[in-house]
Length: 114
Image (cartoon, rainbow, N blue to C red; front, side, top):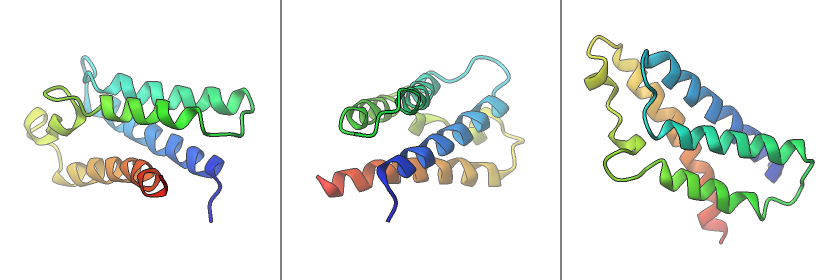
């Protein structure tokens, strides 16, 4: 069984992959929801940097930002790679969805534990 610290490290890695993907796809302004993923990654890094072990305080902050990244009309669920980049390889859509799913799984597991 993974420790909470290992789960946060994995979440940070997945957020980095997602953010790299978005930065590589977009040549101009980044989508609005990107800022929430950036905030999540930065909060995890601060958590590790200060040497905190108890995740009780950081999880609600991460959940808040995850929910905010899915805001109506401007959330990540409305980001259509094929619409924005019609020449993009369809496999990129699957890759993007896979990363989002991996991140979402972190929060789904938390909901089952409560």
